[in-house]
Image (cartoon, rainbow, N blue to C red; front, top):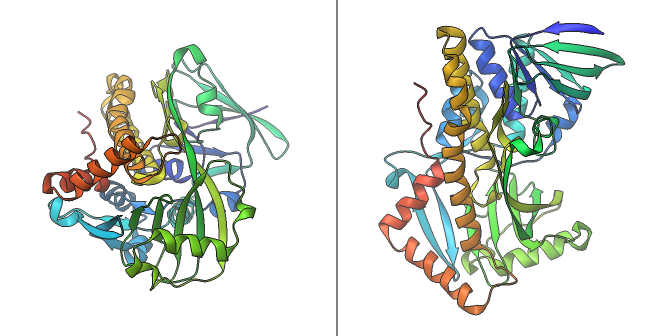
Length: 397
């Protein structure tokens, strides 16, 4: 067994692991990253693409924002469609100048992978049989297989950025974690296509037939979503059926201008809310989907991972730079304060915008009335805007 050493071992080479690795590398803190999938697989994942101001700033701080700043689409607002009418949520005006950036997670990952390769930091793809050891000691270590060899990796800290199904959270004794979960009775059928977006900004539509979202990746590539039953087979949805249903759920002014075309990819994503507490166990820290899942309605999943990254990065800066090991125990509490606020907003948006099959007519009317109140009240629109652009990151002191 070969022995390797690093300061921070990062499990998972998705955007959260890569961003943490880049920030730490720039600060002179050594990292080694393990990823169970191939680089091509990681790069090929189709994910969300609305970045909060905080994540945009963090990518700039990491020195990987050049392409995002050149190609990303700055959005100062978005549209809510209720009863066939559009209501504009002016993010910039309602939040004192903040906005969001539309830039695909696939592109964020590509930029971060290129930056890590450029500085020569180590990422071992297709690392198998990863196991974590002695997490409650000052010298945790991992074992794994890579290219037919078995390795022991010694480190100071472990960052679990390996997603909901990853080994990091599963390495924590079940009795040490409290799980909070809600599974929704529907999913999102998403379609990616090379057609111009139907609207310059994102459109979230509530309709008796179900929710719809009009999003985009660029001025020529669109991403559309339809609410469908959670167990809906993708094979039941031809391109023609998808476009026809989308038009029914959009306000007439948008349906008439919708440009259709062949799909590049279709998939059904289930919706769930999920949080584990605490987000750390000894020298292991959970980040992103390893610790929490949000429904995509509020565009919070990737952005919450970024705020976890920011918190752990700034704690480790003080640990290595000032010896502030006392801050390590604050990681989970700091993260969870922001996580639960984002979970609440995502739950609220999901509850307001979707049709719930078990809901009676009274409940449906209440949801419509609440959303109608929010969009016709400046205070209501401001609440939506503040949450959408992202709540501020908590200072590490």
